[in-house]
Image (cartoon, rainbow over all chains, first blue to last red):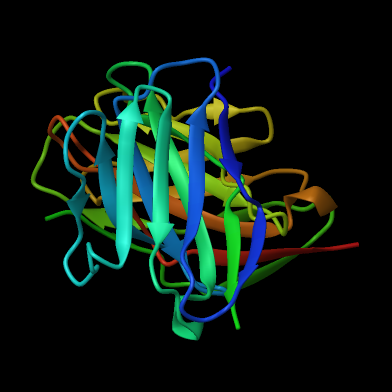
Length: 116
Length: 115
């Protein structure tokens, strides 16, 4: 089946540093990937849609200069949190669409970012 | 724009019993899919079941089934013979249309299965 690998699963960063999270589709090609943010006991909040070979589409209120998305290949999308601050601490999840028609998403295992 | 509403934040059920999780949505589209996702404590999102709106038959996956009422825009999930491993957050989700369609999630419901 379709598998999405997301790394790192956990990361702790100092305030002011940048951190990159990778999302890979292991056995299928994903022209579109999605990045979500989730606070404890809340739903997933879509941050941006990552499109292979073009600029990401950001949701309203999401700072594109803060959350850099690169989708350089059909199997890899990266989210870079630049100049991280404690308020960026959160759980970040990526997903990729596979198959045609059904719009089924396969999710990565998520990345817990803690900014000290 | 599509909206998804899950009005129950928490539910609890005794092991081996049946529980129904509610979801309503709003859309002007006629053909679409609906999904239920499960997020256990590991936080890995897992697809539980999906329903195609143009199919009148309710989807079933083992102990999971849906009650899809298209006219009422209702899409509830029934879990039969609840197991401890069913303890999780459950999200109802509705995809928008278009080349870069995206899923709109409900707020989720925390289900606890009691031994």
